[in-house]
Amino acid sequence: MKMLNRIEASKTPRWDMMMVVKKTQVELDQLYTDLQKIGHADELAALISSISSLNHLMLKLDTRRVGEIENA
Image 1 (spheres, rainbow, N blue to C red):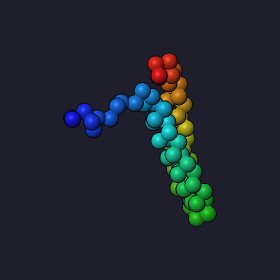
Image 2: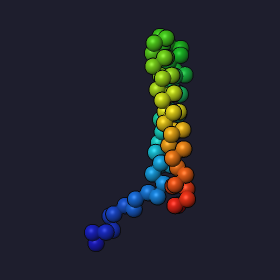
Image 3: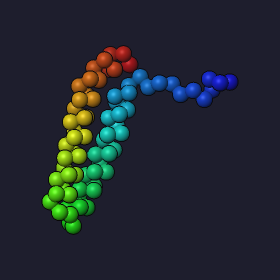
Image 4: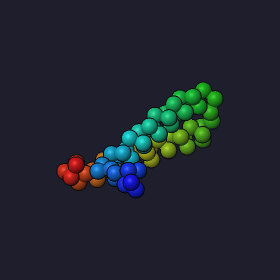
């Protein structure tokens, strides 16, 4: 009975992370669009930096997925 509630570990953890990052990127893009109307340059620059960092993370995660694809 103890094993009924156990969740199986993901075989593609990087892919799962990429999907969460993608959702965050969509939200930040929407925030940027909304902030363009009323925001200051430094606020917009901070959001651009965040979006850029997430893009970099997506590239790094995708690059390391080769092993996941072969093992899945």
